Amino acid sequence: MPAYKNKAQNNIVTAEILLDNGLPLSSAHPAYYSSFLLMKFLLAHCFSVSYAQQETLTKNKDSHKLLSNMALPTMAAQDTETGNDYLVWYNKLKMMRRKADYKPVEIEDSLLRDNLTTAKNFMKSVDTHFISVKK
Image 1 (cartoon, rainbow, N blue to C red):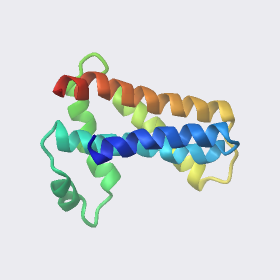
Image 2 (cartoon, rainbow, N blue to C red):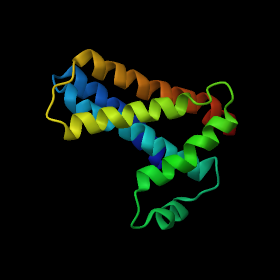
Image 3 (cartoon, rainbow, N blue to C red):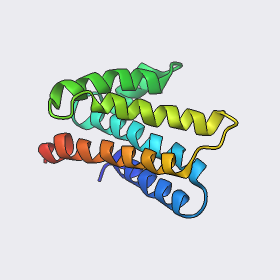
């Protein structure tokens, strides 16, 4: 399995472990990164933007913004069933990560569990509409 897809799956598992072991706030970070790494994988393996090209394009730039702006519209255009859900899911994950990492607030466990569900939905939809189709 390609490294970035494997890392994305490992981040889902990590978020689950953190939630189940009393560290719910820390789960937002790997939940978000699962979607980001999956987009890097899609760009390279489904949308013909190699990892080397991604590195070149994002050098000294906001790689998260640039790569998501490349991947999400293409995902929405190619997956008419799920369409703009990818953008909604990604932004939800990104906002929760920012809140968990940078805001001096507590976040209810139920919201963080919902966040993990969002990450799983993102991955499941990508698997269904892009990765399994490619096989």
